[in-house]
Length: 414
Picture 1 (cartoon, rainbow, N blue to C red):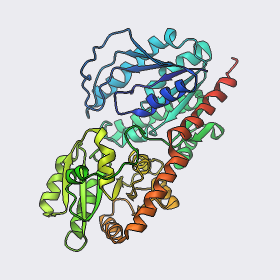
Picture 2 (tube, rainbow, N blue to C red):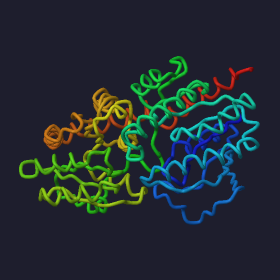
Picture 3 (cartoon, one colour):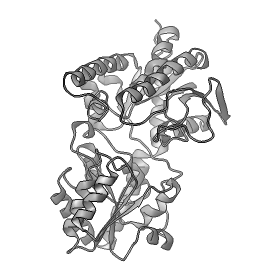
Picture 4 (cartoon, rainbow, N blue to C red):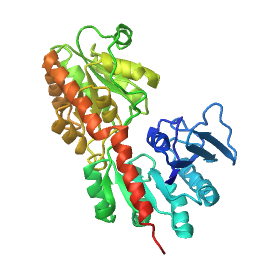
């Protein structure tokens, strides 16, 4: 197949799904053309070594990548974020008319929804079918964020984006979603149930894999012979890390367990301040680390924490932290709603607690600390097996390849 991939985010940005899909499809013998922007996520600043220009094309194996200019931004300003999304919609659509004119099928990575603009035009002009890969349900994830206005303005934004999404769902030949509950929600929002399929996200398998715990990694996390629960990733309003801090502080005097927090984000200062006020000696902050170090840090810890606020948009979400942990064979402590907790409970890959309930999470920390080494090792084995069977790159690309081929085969004759 000749496959076109449209994604605003692409390597070297930490949005590895489109890049690893492109590389794997290329290895499988498909001709792949990628249309993306210049890298600026998550800082909102153009990456060093890149200069925006209209024609920027590279070829690696069977994958050809063209970058188009956009307005770089990733802050909380509604106007600047809108400019970021809309600028890519305009430039990618203009480039797609020639660059993707002869592909058999398109794959569109969402969010943002504006990335579908090029697919919309190519379907209209050339009847090229598109597979939409939904990572976040819009408008919910937009209006729940700090970007959206409140009051009547927020409701108007919600309604407008909802109308656009119904059109996108209708125009897509098929839709991949990342969790069972997300499928239900997308169908509820107007998508044809027969074309919506669950494809669990994989992780960056070059970075996240089973490795041995080294003395250096243990020293890096301050391991002192106690159970270690690690949160690695964004520290923002949706992760509710303050609940983990309160839970760790609650068990500090009675349970041999440490909480290690790796990463940064908009809530970082508030979380550190809370830990200082609580005076817990079992909480450590490591800041951001090179992704290449993460597998070793995972191995040095005993559990990975997956925490999300109890919002409706997260009940059908499998956060990227979960496949990363399972790929490393790391048991998890989950304080998240919906599918994420159900998956962990169903596979026996860890412990689950109700979201946004720090006393219950403290109880979960106590259970994690009390498990014997053999019990934890069994969890680790089940974690790795679950990833390989349900979430791996091979399993995910198999599913998407079938969807792309089916869409190509039933190309709309109109």
